[in-house]
Image (cartoon, rainbow, N blue to C red; front, side, top):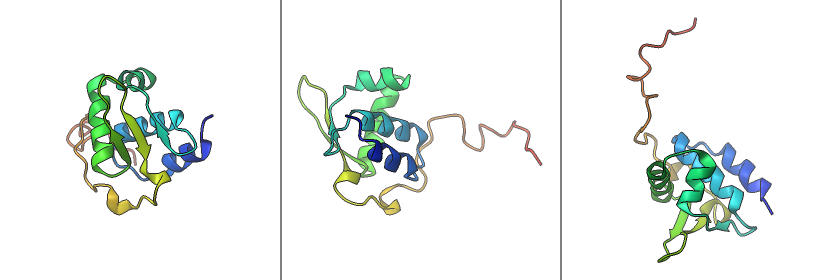
Length: 116
């Protein structure tokens, strides 16, 4: 059963890394009532239409910023736990300036005309 409260709470989190947020929302789709799940990284890549390497980087970012706990299992999908289900996630847990891996940095959008 999909935990809609978890999805809504996650969607409202101020996560500055948009790719990581998409992966976190995809993980929420698989979570049980305790906020745990175990989709494969390939499944997450397929669900989000992202490259597998991008998914792996986003999972590492989420783990480093305390939004998920990952238990790695040999020859099995990783086990993910949403930390928001365990404790309140505060803005201090999230880095202010994450590394950007897209073309939306100020330098990448300098050629876009500013609207008045």
